[in-house]
Image (cartoon, rainbow, N blue to C red; front, top):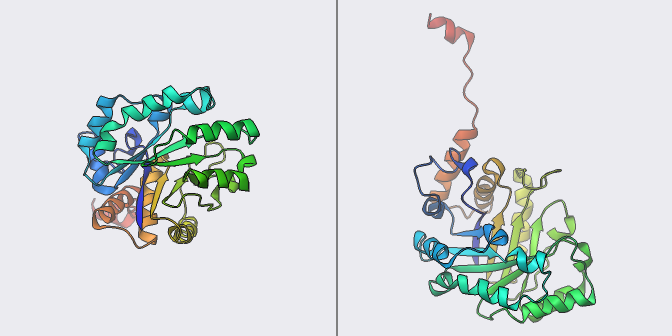
Length: 278
């Protein structure tokens, strides 16, 4: 079983000084020293150019995997209607990753107001028909009306993974596995106003280690991404998760120790120490 664990995005400036040592290093190659996969969120807002994707492929090791979000033009603006040309165009941009075998899973995140219905099911299936059988895909639902057997049967038919998430929407955290080959997990955080402004406790991570063991019995590959990016929460919790699961590597241990040193409070100066210096 392959566990590919990383974060949603890598280019956050606020990670400098915590995850990244300084601003002089190239972020993506450094990120690849610690993690073997990343989810590209920026593709949701604007598809990257093929030249940019080619640059990503050259910056990482041969085994690295990029998972990308399908553009919101397809999922939110057009709401899965008349999107064949847009989707095929997006796949074309990803050719450098396909050729180098660095493409992970493509994520279709549906809008919260995309509610279960016959028309919506038909639109979803029309999208699934466009999926190449050689690629991995996942769908993230944001409305509880999709939590039903008809949904899971449709995903199983096309071998599409149901995205299992951790967020204030509890129904999403149920480990429903719909693909026979892969699973997709996202940790959004449980912040009250902003989901992503959150740091998981060891107990909360341990609960997910148990869920992961269950998921691993059903698929050959698990993609997992921490999305709680505020104050480097995502890389911190990802490394803690790997340590709790007893899967942490030496480079990851060093990265975790570096972050912990940044958060460790300085030793207070005692008045007796101060007086002795006078």
